[in-house]
Length: 411
Ligand SMILES: [Zn+2]
Ligand SMILES: [Zn+2]
Image (spheres, rainbow, N blue to C red):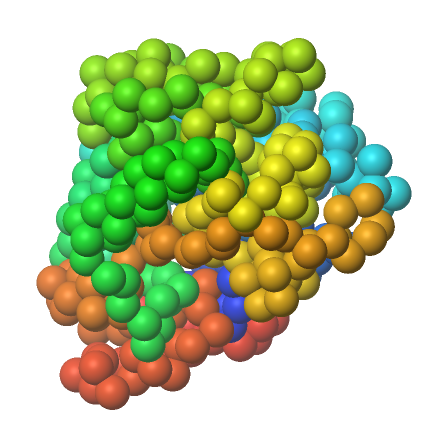
């Protein structure tokens, strides 16, 4: 059976994801996100939607779901953990929109309605939707992140964000035999250094900074990276603090511990860190040895408070462990050694280093995953470097969809 597919965002870029599938009677939407840039960017307006599928709770995938659910009242299929963290992220994004003076295209009421429309389902579950069965698989990206397998006459796998290597928090994704593979390609043309070596170097740097009397600030995204870093550091025995929204996310991870690789490890990591709950404890934390805190790109969140205190101390260090997008303070710090703090360009005297703890598969891992899925057609999305996959995928019919342009697949 032929179905029509169309990317409303995120085909040849990272951010504001959205893809429709039309079977002639119904329209399904897979993800609907936003890019939290200044100002934020949104996907093309979706047509009327019957069913919505959400892979995970990062804003580039979930950030605009309430605009659709509020408008069309469609059900949202996702894991219960992704639903709960999305709720947290969406309210936070509304708050940021208001404080920065942007028009957010949905209301708190739409978020509430979205949560009422969630149909929770979990890995290996299958739901029947007319002619299509849908099965959920773990995407290995962050806890609760899912890949959707659409089973009609043939099989179509949509990966969302994907990692195939084991991380401390989640085990890597396993290939799923399919005819059509719609796969992310964030790391087209790039591979990660071995994770074990990165961890060794990261810990050696932390020991060095603490030995010379400095404080280590690790700016982290709230969902996934904060907890991965906490687990990596949990045995060091230093005076360690965790600040920002990552704290509540850790609580949600513990409530849905079936999505974690090892709940006991997460629990002991949580015990190894002291939580910053007030401005008083924040002052205490700034005198500590390690602070793991949001926001990951230094564009807001408690991290800026710590930098105000530590910026002139060359003994201290800022260790970046996540992607630093263009036009963010994190990127500025890496390129110039300065950041914008309270509307002023400020030189940071601390040591600055970046470590690759990506939750996305590298180029070779993606190619290997694709080959093991053994599809006929491969659609590459969520990538700025998609053409770099072409030499390695010559045995397949590769489709690089364009924004807003329809393409067909036999499903
Ligand atoms: Zn993600
Ligand atoms: Zn993403």
